[in-house]
Length: 146
Image (tube, rainbow, N blue to C red; front, side, top):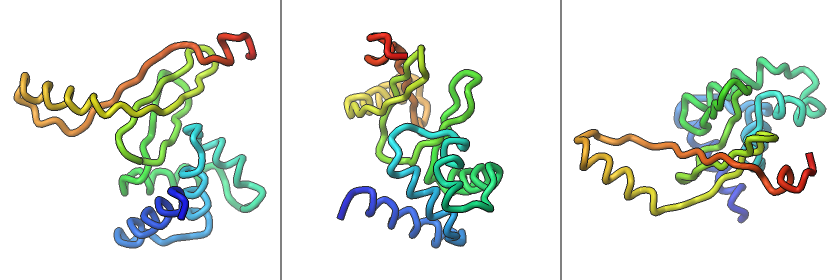
């Protein structure tokens, strides 16, 4: 079974456990988020699914994303004043962001868990999580593709 299928099944299980009804729209939004590696905005999701659900509005997408966020399935990423992007919550990962076109790419670096441990040790804080953003110029923009 593909990783995304497992994630979708687990996500739906989580929703059921928290009493959230699984509507066809919710199923489609979750599936899109899991398959999309591009950290879509609510608008991106709406545009990708409007042909399937002609009665769905951007507000519906936002409301469902809010539900997913409250249940802990989705993270809302806000960077500067650009519209929020949404990310399906997988294992800890970090984001590198292009300053030119705004493209955001995930990368993993397990070594950073040490940083949480150190921060906790040095400050006495009980660390809940951390977030790392790295900024630069993506290869497309660097080559002048934009």
